[in-house]
Length: 199
Image 1 (cartoon, rainbow, N blue to C red):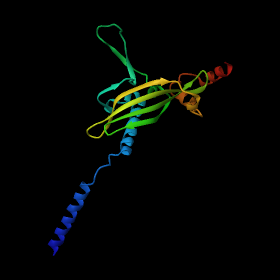
Image 2: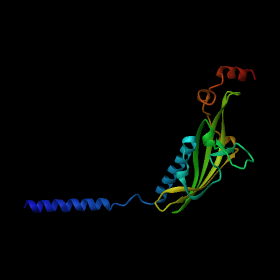
Image 3: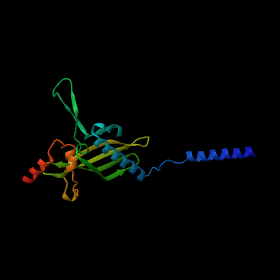
Image 4: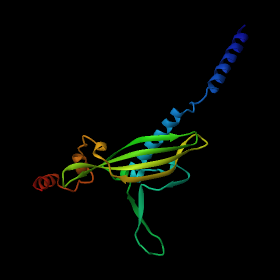
């Protein structure tokens, strides 16, 4: 009887384990694909914001084209036979703004490819005027789903754009303290404030 019970227990255990292994993964639906795409775009901007520590290369599909890279390299010796590259100069809005946020405005997708439009917002501080100002860019991504299920960037392009007052951030964030503790730390905030009042 004990052997029968042990055999029954082992059979039940194997059936339970087999059922667990047979459970399907997350369903491949438009909703799950969109969630994965949003996660990829969020990570793209995290890497852009990280500047020297950022790594967008793992997010690029094989054969990808970044038409608006986050940084460029300055040639320290123009015209030299041996190309000598200087340090990276960051040019993307995400990398240069004091604070940054992005908004996905549209996603068009199928099972293999997706097109994503993103509004980028960068916030800066003008010491001479003692106020925050905003710049905006329009980014477009073409994404490709890999055989392992990952979405990667096939084409990226971002361009600065003008924007109507209806799209401006209201109220604007107060970046004075952040400015003077980072990029403006060598400036005298009180002197800047007096100069702004007397302008």
